[in-house]
Each structure stands twice: as structure tokens, then as C-alpha cells.
Length: 348
Image (cartoon, rainbow, N blue to C red; front, side, top):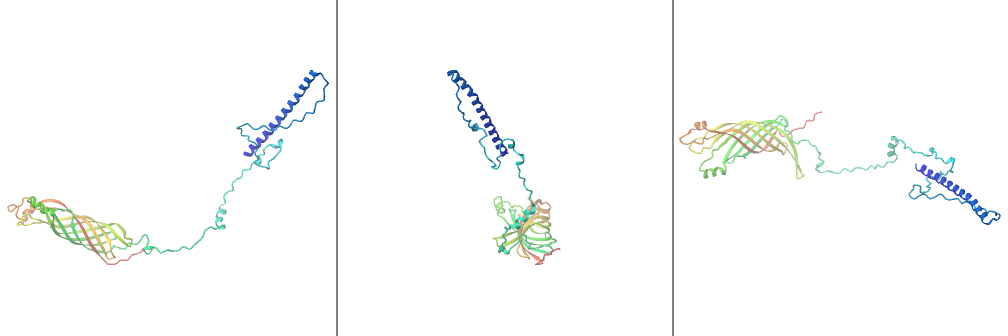
């Protein structure tokens, strides 16, 4: 498009120059007869030969007006010099638009082979810490079809008058790696806490409390959580969390306010729920700790019992006051597993 525009400007300049030259020539021819007629009328002399008038000089084309787009000829193509006239028209065949060549996939693929730039070097294997430990490892401990023998100790957590310490044990058999059934038994030892003595001294009255003697239960365990953590980046310790639910029986005994009277005992139905954690030490030993809540309905000594009223244990028990009890206990123990080893089985 630029070539067409510049050629059009060139042709218009030639036309303006031709018109200006013709106008100047016509003006000179017309001015000459007028001058000779004026000279004859003044002197009435014979006409002399008129001197030869020089040929009019070629007038350069007028400069373009200020602000116009015609700023002079700019030769975009030096070979494109044709005389003005009939053959000066722009040939549309001279405008050539270069078309892009279609991409050749085979040629692009062959380029890396012709000029290879990939430098192959030998990769050096550097030793890693932890003896090249992998991200996902096998469980270091399997419980399926193994028996757990768990001796433990515990203490009550929510009784501010009397505290019980327990020594017990549990025998559990794991049907799978996450499900187990077991039996437990506990023996209780009690001690009075400071509020018990303060109430007796200040109010001159003894609190009504019961002590627990023993308990036993059938428990079911479920293991939904398994994990591991590192100790000072030197040792991995695996652990798991499991829930327990069971049903059992136990015995409580009244702590009489008057030591001359006989206490009575109660047989308790004791369902329990709890959550525990287990840490694996070796293939045959683990450490367990957890919290259990033993829920039962207990009977206490009558408030108006004296040496003249409800003197016998049976009479006092028939007139006893009942209350729902939550005996929350913390337990910790060491488990021993039978058999002491296990093997992984790979299914093909």
C-alpha cells in the first residue's frame, strides 16, 4: 500500500508541473502584442525587429503546503522508475503478499536429531540418612490372632472425698488387627482426701461415701487410628488409639459414720466406655494408657441411721439412698503379646 501511495504522489506532481508551465507560456504570448501596440501609438516609428525572447525556464513543482501529507518523493523501490504517461499506471501484479509456509511436523521432529543439544552426564548416587528409608513402610507390629496380657494400675479422677487406687489386668484376643474382645478385673484400695477431714471437723458431720472393692468386665476394643512420630530424629515410634466399651459387675461398700454399726455391700452393674493409646516398644511389648468411665447406680447409708434406727445392715440397705455415679479412672500398663513374633503374608 505504501508503494501505491508514493507512486500516486509522484504522478500528481508531474501533472501540476505541466499545468504551471502551460499557464506561464500563455501569459507571455499574450503580453507581447500589448507592449508593441503601446509603443506605436507614442512614437509612430517603424517597427523594429523584436529581440528573441528566451524560452521559458522550467518551473519546479510547487512545494507542498504546510501540514500536507505530500512531503516529497520517497523511493521505496529504486528499480521501480517508469516514465509518466500511459505506462505509469500501477500494475496490481507488482503487489506480492508473502504467504506463510505450512508447518512440517516431520521437519520439526528431525531438528533435535540434526543439532543435538542434550548433554548426558552420569548421575552420582549420594547416600541418604536413615539408611534410605522409604516414605510408606510396613506396620512394625501386627495384632491379628494374637493375645494381649495387660497388667495395669489406675486411680480415680473425679471424686474429691475419697480416692481409689486400682491394680488390675486384662486379657484380650485380637480377631483382626483392629477388633478385639477381652476380660478385665480390678482390685480397689481407697484413701480419704483432705475435704473429707475438713467437712468432719468444721461441720461436725461425716460425709456419706462408699468404697469400691472389686470389679470385672467384658470389653470390646476397636482401633481406628494408627500413626508414628520421630524422637529427636533418631528413632521412629509407632502408636495407635483405640476405643473400649464393655459391661461388667462390681462391688461397693458403705463407709459407716458410726463405727459401731455394720456396713453393707452393693452388687453393681457397671458398663464402661473409654479411649486409650498404645505405643509399640518391640514385637512383643507395648505401653498403654487411657481413661475409662465406669457408670453405675450405687446405694449409700441412710442419713438418719443411728444406734436406735436401722441398726442392722439389711435394714439400712433397704432404706438406703441411691445415686448415679460416674467413676472416671486413669489407667496405665505394660502389655505382653503372645505369640512373641509375627509374619507378613503377601497375597498374589
